[in-house]
Length: 71
Image 1 (cartoon, rainbow, N blue to C red):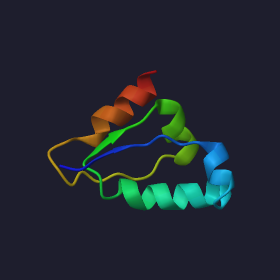
Image 2 (cartoon, helix red, strand yellow):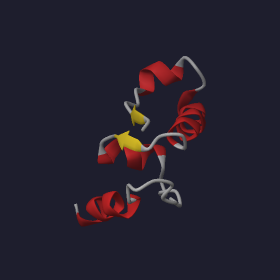
Image 3 (cartoon, one colour):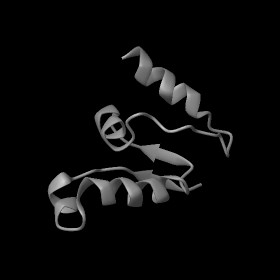
Image 4 (cartoon, one colour):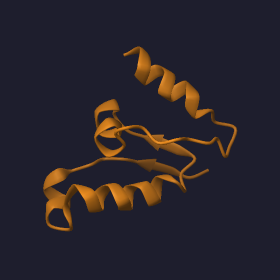
């Protein structure tokens, strides 16, 4: 089980390519994670609109997206 804490910091990414590069790098990392820890705000900033998600494990991502939609 691989987990990733998505903690986006704009000031840090500004010295390494900005938001566009951050999205590209973080997207590659997240695709290899089974569990993603992130705030709703960060997810919306990095993936707006949200990506198509396919469950690769027993964890169902629709539960998470349903939670976002209800808030």
